Image (cartoon, rainbow over all chains, first blue to last red; front, side):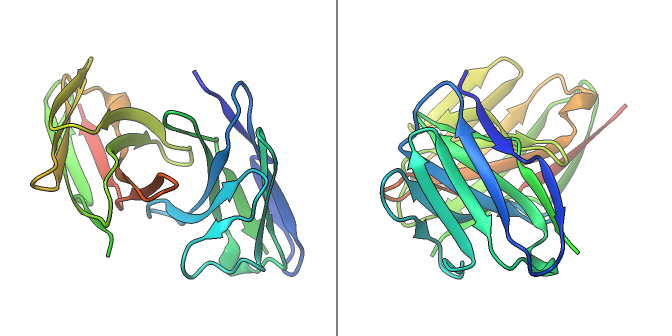
Length: 112
Length: 110
């Protein structure tokens, strides 16, 4: 089956720093990737749709200047949380779209 | 607007059958997914319905009625490892965005 990886799997950082999360489709090409955020005991909330070679489409309420998305190739999308604050602590999950969406294992971000 | 409703929590006994309901109201519909998610892990795909009716896959079945905006996930012969959250998600929009419900936490007891 299709495999999606994320790196890092967890990260702890100080408030004010930036964190980059990578999402890779390992055995297929994905024109579209999605970034989700999930707070404890809540469901996944779509943050943005990442399209290879074009600008990402952000959901309402998601700051595009804070959550920078780059989809540089058909197998890699990156999410950079800029100037992270404790309220950004969450579980960030990406998915890659082929015939269905395959999810990465997630990245747990903790901002101190 | 987009709205997907499912019960917050359910409990069931090992070996029994449980049905998790999902109702939806979305601006577009390209299919409905069910995912299983264990705590701290990413969701894993269970089923996909785009036409009305029942899709069976082993111990798991999923039903869809598009006219009623309704789906259910049926789990048979429950096992302890089935304790997890079950997420109902509707595929909507030009980029095939997945809109998730809040999830149903299922606890299976011996």
